[in-house]
Length: 197
Image (cartoon, rainbow, N blue to C red; front, side, top):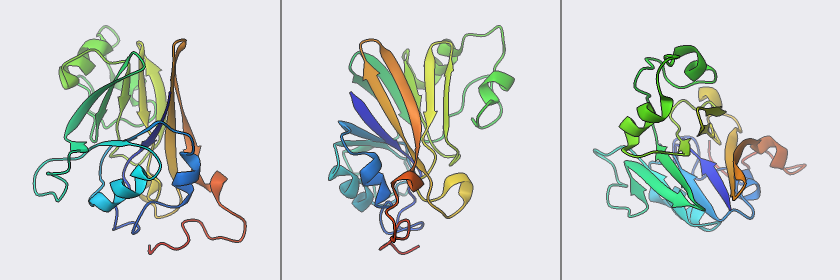
Protein backbone atom coordinates (compact mmCIF):
# COMPACT_ATOMS: atom_id res chain seq x y z
CA UNK A 1 0.00 0.00 0.00
CA UNK A 2 1.20 3.48 -0.89
CA UNK A 3 0.06 6.48 1.18
CA UNK A 4 0.59 10.14 0.31
CA UNK A 5 1.54 12.33 3.28
CA UNK A 6 0.97 16.08 3.27
CA UNK A 7 0.77 18.81 5.88
CA UNK A 8 0.68 22.56 6.30
CA UNK A 9 -0.96 23.43 2.99
CA UNK A 10 -2.23 26.69 4.54
CA UNK A 11 -4.80 27.23 1.81
CA UNK A 12 -5.80 29.84 0.82
CA UNK A 13 -3.03 31.78 2.63
CA UNK A 14 -0.12 30.13 0.83
CA UNK A 15 -2.10 29.42 -2.35
CA UNK A 16 -5.65 28.79 -3.52
CA UNK A 17 -4.92 25.06 -3.71
CA UNK A 18 -1.89 22.81 -3.35
CA UNK A 19 0.78 23.13 -6.06
CA UNK A 20 0.02 21.02 -9.14
CA UNK A 21 3.23 19.05 -8.47
CA UNK A 22 1.48 17.38 -5.50
CA UNK A 23 -0.83 15.49 -7.89
CA UNK A 24 2.20 14.24 -9.81
CA UNK A 25 4.03 13.19 -6.64
CA UNK A 26 0.92 11.35 -5.41
CA UNK A 27 0.22 9.42 -8.62
CA UNK A 28 -0.73 5.86 -7.68
CA UNK A 29 -1.28 6.43 -3.96
CA UNK A 30 -4.13 4.50 -2.33
CA UNK A 31 -4.79 7.01 0.45
CA UNK A 32 -3.73 10.52 1.49
CA UNK A 33 -3.13 11.53 5.11
CA UNK A 34 -3.18 15.29 5.75
CA UNK A 35 -1.50 16.30 9.02
CA UNK A 36 -3.18 19.67 9.47
CA UNK A 37 -3.16 23.40 8.85
CA UNK A 38 -5.66 22.87 6.05
CA UNK A 39 -8.03 25.82 6.66
CA UNK A 40 -10.56 25.14 3.88
CA UNK A 41 -12.45 22.05 2.74
CA UNK A 42 -11.66 22.82 -0.91
CA UNK A 43 -8.06 21.75 -0.24
CA UNK A 44 -9.29 18.29 0.80
CA UNK A 45 -11.67 18.21 -2.19
CA UNK A 46 -8.69 18.90 -4.47
CA UNK A 47 -6.70 16.07 -2.86
CA UNK A 48 -9.67 13.69 -3.08
CA UNK A 49 -9.43 13.89 -6.86
CA UNK A 50 -6.21 11.89 -6.37
CA UNK A 51 -7.18 9.43 -3.60
CA UNK A 52 -9.37 9.18 -0.48
CA UNK A 53 -8.29 11.63 2.25
CA UNK A 54 -8.13 11.38 6.03
CA UNK A 55 -7.09 14.54 7.85
CA UNK A 56 -6.46 16.12 11.23
CA UNK A 57 -6.89 19.72 12.35
CA UNK A 58 -7.08 21.65 15.59
CA UNK A 59 -10.55 21.98 17.04
CA UNK A 60 -11.92 25.38 18.01
CA UNK A 61 -13.15 28.12 15.68
CA UNK A 62 -12.64 26.25 12.45
CA UNK A 63 -14.75 25.82 9.30
CA UNK A 64 -13.60 22.18 9.11
CA UNK A 65 -15.20 21.18 12.43
CA UNK A 66 -18.14 19.54 10.65
CA UNK A 67 -16.11 17.89 7.88
CA UNK A 68 -16.23 14.09 8.40
CA UNK A 69 -12.73 13.73 6.89
CA UNK A 70 -11.23 15.80 9.71
CA UNK A 71 -10.63 14.98 13.38
CA UNK A 72 -8.21 16.46 15.91
CA UNK A 73 -6.16 13.28 16.24
CA UNK A 74 -6.46 10.13 14.17
CA UNK A 75 -5.51 6.48 14.46
CA UNK A 76 -5.88 4.41 11.32
CA UNK A 77 -5.09 0.75 10.66
CA UNK A 78 -3.63 0.13 7.22
CA UNK A 79 -2.15 -3.17 5.96
CA UNK A 80 -1.62 -4.40 9.53
CA UNK A 81 0.15 -1.22 10.71
CA UNK A 82 -1.22 1.26 13.24
CA UNK A 83 -0.67 4.86 12.15
CA UNK A 84 -1.23 7.89 14.36
CA UNK A 85 -1.75 11.31 12.76
CA UNK A 86 -1.70 14.63 14.62
CA UNK A 87 -0.75 18.16 13.66
CA UNK A 88 1.45 19.41 16.51
CA UNK A 89 3.22 16.33 17.90
CA UNK A 90 4.84 16.66 21.31
CA UNK A 91 6.48 13.67 22.99
CA UNK A 92 6.30 13.40 26.79
CA UNK A 93 9.89 13.74 27.99
CA UNK A 94 10.93 16.00 25.09
CA UNK A 95 10.63 19.74 25.67
CA UNK A 96 11.48 20.80 22.11
CA UNK A 97 9.40 20.63 18.94
CA UNK A 98 10.25 17.61 16.81
CA UNK A 99 12.84 18.63 14.23
CA UNK A 100 15.47 16.29 12.70
CA UNK A 101 17.71 14.91 15.46
CA UNK A 102 15.62 16.17 18.38
CA UNK A 103 14.39 12.74 19.48
CA UNK A 104 17.98 11.42 19.61
CA UNK A 105 19.16 14.45 21.57
CA UNK A 106 16.21 15.07 23.88
CA UNK A 107 14.40 11.81 24.66
CA UNK A 108 15.72 10.16 27.87
CA UNK A 109 17.99 7.21 27.03
CA UNK A 110 16.52 5.01 29.76
CA UNK A 111 12.87 5.62 28.80
CA UNK A 112 10.52 3.77 26.45
CA UNK A 113 9.59 5.84 23.41
CA UNK A 114 6.70 3.49 22.49
CA UNK A 115 5.25 4.08 25.98
CA UNK A 116 5.61 7.86 25.61
CA UNK A 117 3.90 7.81 22.21
CA UNK A 118 1.14 5.60 23.62
CA UNK A 119 0.46 8.31 26.24
CA UNK A 120 -0.26 10.72 23.37
CA UNK A 121 -2.38 8.42 21.19
CA UNK A 122 -3.75 5.89 23.70
CA UNK A 123 -2.43 2.88 21.77
CA UNK A 124 0.77 1.33 20.42
CA UNK A 125 1.78 2.78 17.04
CA UNK A 126 4.00 1.67 14.19
CA UNK A 127 4.02 5.07 12.44
CA UNK A 128 3.49 8.67 13.60
CA UNK A 129 2.65 11.29 10.95
CA UNK A 130 2.71 14.93 12.03
CA UNK A 131 3.18 18.47 10.76
CA UNK A 132 3.34 21.96 12.26
CA UNK A 133 7.09 22.64 11.96
CA UNK A 134 7.07 22.78 8.12
CA UNK A 135 10.31 20.78 8.28
CA UNK A 136 10.48 17.35 6.66
CA UNK A 137 11.69 14.43 8.75
CA UNK A 138 11.83 10.65 8.45
CA UNK A 139 13.32 8.92 11.50
CA UNK A 140 12.94 5.46 13.02
CA UNK A 141 13.27 5.23 16.80
CA UNK A 142 12.62 2.18 18.97
CA UNK A 143 10.49 0.58 16.26
CA UNK A 144 8.34 3.63 15.47
CA UNK A 145 8.64 5.47 12.17
CA UNK A 146 8.21 9.25 12.59
CA UNK A 147 7.33 11.25 9.47
CA UNK A 148 6.72 14.94 8.93
CA UNK A 149 6.24 15.56 5.19
CA UNK A 150 7.09 19.25 5.54
CA UNK A 151 4.92 21.70 3.59
CA UNK A 152 4.21 21.76 -0.15
CA UNK A 153 4.19 25.55 -0.32
CA UNK A 154 5.80 26.89 2.88
CA UNK A 155 8.79 24.63 3.62
CA UNK A 156 10.78 25.83 6.63
CA UNK A 157 8.33 28.77 6.75
CA UNK A 158 9.52 30.09 3.36
CA UNK A 159 7.11 30.66 0.48
CA UNK A 160 8.41 28.35 -2.24
CA UNK A 161 7.85 24.86 -3.58
CA UNK A 162 8.35 22.33 -0.81
CA UNK A 163 7.76 18.65 -0.13
CA UNK A 164 5.33 15.84 0.57
CA UNK A 165 5.93 12.29 1.76
CA UNK A 166 5.22 8.78 0.58
CA UNK A 167 4.65 5.98 3.10
CA UNK A 168 4.85 2.44 1.77
CA UNK A 169 3.41 -0.47 3.74
CA UNK A 170 4.19 -4.06 2.82
CA UNK A 171 4.15 -7.37 4.72
CA UNK A 172 7.94 -7.01 4.94
CA UNK A 173 7.87 -3.61 6.62
CA UNK A 174 7.12 0.09 6.39
CA UNK A 175 9.26 2.86 4.93
CA UNK A 176 8.83 6.52 4.07
CA UNK A 177 10.55 9.03 1.88
CA UNK A 178 10.34 12.77 1.42
CA UNK A 179 9.52 13.90 -2.11
CA UNK A 180 10.80 17.29 -3.31
CA UNK A 181 8.05 18.80 -5.43
CA UNK A 182 10.61 20.64 -7.57
CA UNK A 183 11.45 17.21 -9.05
CA UNK A 184 7.98 17.25 -10.65
CA UNK A 185 8.04 20.76 -12.10
CA UNK A 186 7.43 20.90 -15.85
CA UNK A 187 9.91 22.73 -18.10
CA UNK A 188 8.58 26.13 -19.07
CA UNK A 189 5.96 26.14 -16.34
CA UNK A 190 6.59 28.03 -13.13
CA UNK A 191 6.34 25.87 -10.01
CA UNK A 192 2.80 26.09 -8.71
CA UNK A 193 1.78 28.00 -11.84
CA UNK A 194 -1.83 29.04 -11.99
CA UNK A 195 -2.05 29.59 -8.26
CA UNK A 196 -2.17 32.88 -6.40
CA UNK A 197 0.66 33.15 -3.89
